[in-house]
Length: 210
Image 1 (spheres, rainbow, N blue to C red):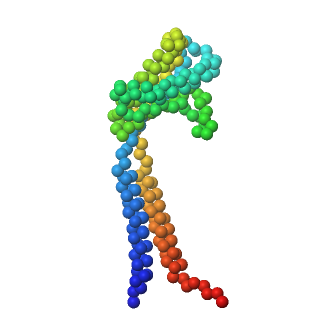
Image 2 (spheres, one colour; image 1 turned 30 degrees about the horizontal axis):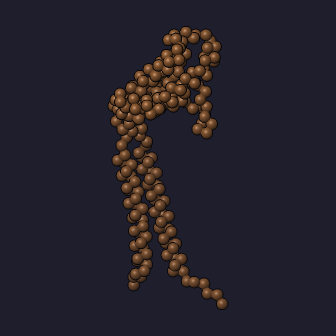
Image 3 (cartoon, rainbow, N blue to C red; image 1 turned 60 degrees about the vertical axis):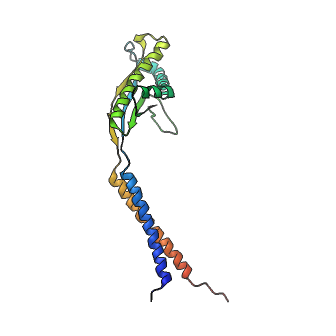
């Protein structure tokens, strides 16, 4: 004879497992349909003017180069310049940051280096925005030095090195789906075991004390 209570408990466990699998399938569908993001980045090297060719010149002027790099980075990231990039046709997100040589907790900006990055779901927009930002960076750097009345032959410059071009930022789909499958199996086992243990504890006879 079939125990209706036992069949109901088993049905509840199956429903819970099915819910976990449905949630996992939904997460997999969202991952599969997530749009790719493209990015283009390059290293910005703030260089000494050509007039400074002495061996000790870099050591002497390195703090000034780093300070100039920090100032121009803040200017590029300002709302005014970001708006100017968009008005010039740059539809991608543009960011610039000094290169941190150590860690987020203990940052070390000991070299006149920065990274310029443009990101967007559309590769063409990334490249166009990067070029606009790079040209604007050069103009801003020259304008800041002209405002400070630095002679042209003594002005520092920003050299772009290692331009990646638009590249897709895509992780390994096999690793993502593999990890999702493992998590789904673990969740199924946990849910099934929890419900089974709960049903067993309910059916266990209460202890009788004399």
